[in-house]
Length: 104
Image (cartoon, rainbow, N blue to C red; front, top):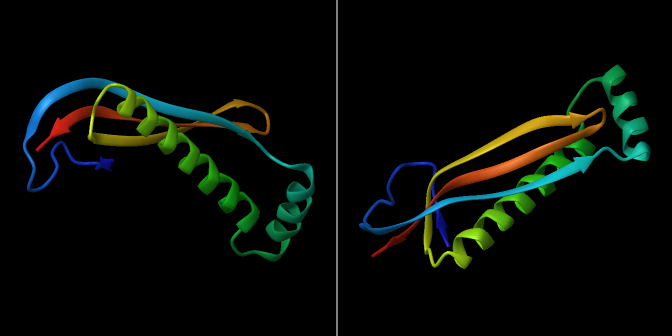
């Protein structure tokens, strides 16, 4: 599956629009990682525990978006976007969305 943030796939022609597709996940913080992250806020530097959590969440949301597009018969997704929002204290939603298309 090709997915791009642009409104077209370079070198390909959009033959058919398949529609809006999305994938999302809600991820919560882990108490053990929260303690380590708290210490890092004192010492400074990247909080890799949260970086890894968000990377996993983005990948899961993208995989679900691709599955939605595949089910609709698409071979590409254009105008892909990622957003995040807090759904409750210590939990965030990641959503990946775009337009499913068939390109040649």
